[in-house]
Length: 295
Image (cartoon, rainbow, N blue to C red; front, side):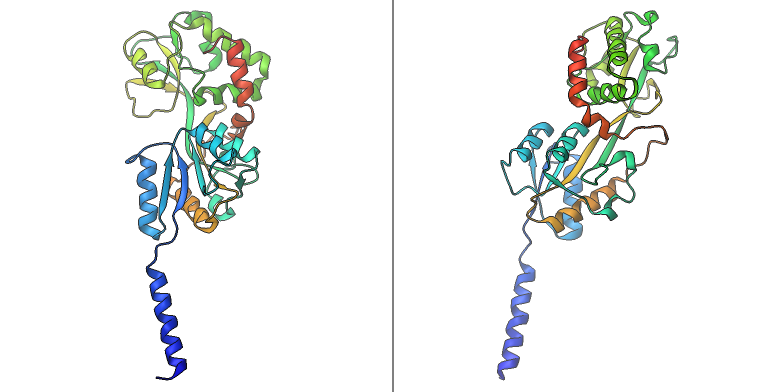
């Protein structure tokens, strides 16, 4: 057999063997567990693209700290459960820009101005009200602070990022002093100490302990009524590509795929501010809540 043909066959054999070797997995930091929505999405991505994904499950803030402290330089993608963590990662310089094409269908208010992160999920703040003959109808945060509602309001903890993002965006809209006065009046109207989570708050409203509360939008809770104050405020699940990603091309492909699958829609409120404000002012919100006795 001629040497040229032998060399060509050897090359083809080498390519064939290499094509059977799976590519190195993308390492993703995320919050959840096996069988969760994000886990199923990542599995679908791998199935469609033949790109394996290795997920490191953990608390959103702990995962962000892991990336910031360079605990593991193998991370390619991070998914957070709030805007404060993804904003912090961008601010500390551990994210690289997402490819512009992947951001084309993401509303400007739901992404970083420099393209370092985008919203994978959006949660809008609403005032919830027990159904039935409860009066008055409350559709604004100022009404929720009115003396007529003394002993009729429930809230969940300010330790929850969903509540801090609301305070942060109110600070940006109204200023710190006015927002603190508002939060203090909410505290005066509480019938019980803030609940540890929103499930407990909903249970309290259903049980008749309180008539009003602040929630993220939960459309499946049909036994409650909702009013969305204007302008719209929100929190998000954020996603970004690690600055030192070992597999940047595959990481960008994953982020673009997820953003298309989740298909986040704008709020429909032209006056809504960028959700990034909630990340920028997260510490201000935490300190304000502490001063106002909102735990």
